[in-house]
Image (tube, rainbow, N blue to C red; front, side):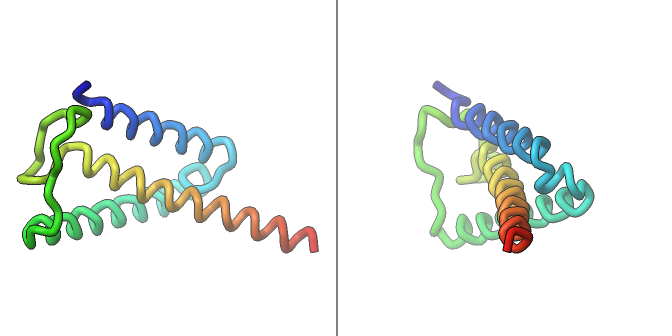
Length: 108
């Protein structure tokens, strides 16, 4: 089913966003910093992908789950969405770890 991977990425992004909103871990705690860090992370990983594609290390596989639209050779449209999700998820997990550490230190 074409587009299922993109749909799963978007659903996951919304789920992480809801957790972030509920617990104020990243975007809902510091919007500006989160947006800047997410954009920097996404651009960094896109550059990494470009180098990997240019050197022949990264190759797009065939999957019926992809939309079939490429932004560049071997760079499906889903890749930037995945990298955005990855960067945002890392920030949310970092915020959660910091909160857990603070609670643990406060309980001692």
